[in-house]
Length: 95
Image (cartoon, rainbow, N blue to C red):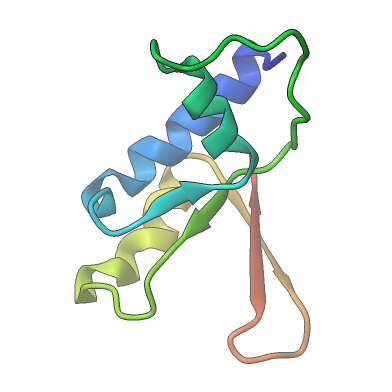
């Protein structure tokens, strides 16, 4: 069962990605949550497994304005954590 804070954080993510909504796809656990919320979704007798993160699939060739995505996320209150020795590094964002 998701909490209000989880929904709030997810809503902030969606708001930050709004300019690219036609180019990105929510995948992973949040995709399952969204499908279950649809009026035509089948009701199940058990709670789905959940995760504490949101995964976003992004095409390799985004529009040039995509350079603003990190700024938009930071402006919405997300914090950046760079991981690994690769270039570019793996970026994890948290609230």
